[in-house]
Amino acid sequence: KKYVGHSGRRFWYLLMNRVIFIPEEDDSKLFFETWENKIKPNVHYVSYSVKKLKDLNKKVLFYENNPSEYKRIQTNCREYCEKYLKYSDIEKFIKNKLENNI
Image 1: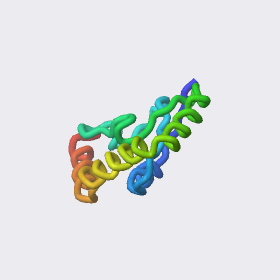
Image 2: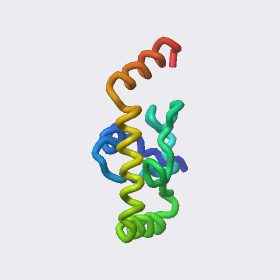
Image 3: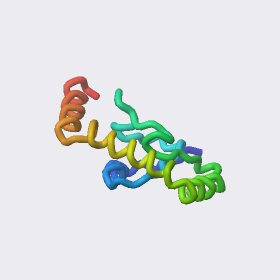
C-alpha cells in the first residue's frame, strides 16, 4: 500500500518558523525535497513513519522535553528557507525545469 501525503502547504509550513513533521512514505515530494539542496530529516524537519505512529508520539514528547533540539531544527529550517526558498530561487528552479522538460 502506498501512502501519499503530498501537500503544497508543506512549503508554507517550512516558512512558518516551526518544526514540521514529514512522513517518510510520502512519494509526492516537493521540489525542495528533491533538488540539489534538499531538506534533510532531523536537520530541517522531523521524519516519521505512518507505519509506526506510536513513534510519532515519542518524537513529539522528545521535542517537548528537549527545547534545545527543537530550537536546533527550527533554526536549521529557518536558515534553509532564508538561503534557498527565496522567490528568485524558486523562479529559477521552475524555469530550469521547464527549459529542461522537467
